[in-house]
Length: 154
Image 1 (tube, rainbow, N blue to C red):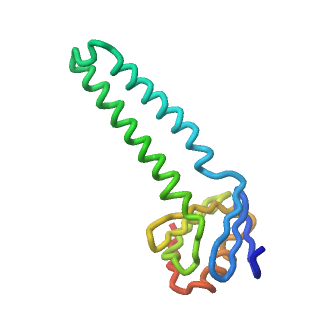
Image 2: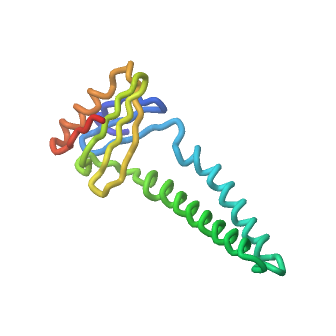
């Protein structure tokens, strides 16, 4: 395993820090939650488009053009959502501390949302329980390893 790890409790798992990198151990991930719904919606739109193109009198009215255009736009939006959920948000497995540009902290009554922004503008959202007082030690541990991190409280 990794040497000299500091561990901090999150709402849905925990985060560990060594001298170079963050390691997330999450119970569930956002892609598992949202991709099922987005996939079903995408399948319905594609099936509807297939059904529209299968009709013999496909472009008999202006409503047909508008319907097909809206379905194509919907399919493109869903493809972009897949791209965002998979590539932009969750494929950043190697979270190096030296690449952190800033940390946004949004403290609420029961939860504290911490958004880590990296130099390539990727973001990683972490949710801490406020009552466990894990946010301040976590930020201090990161500041020890990278003094250039800018902390923003929202």
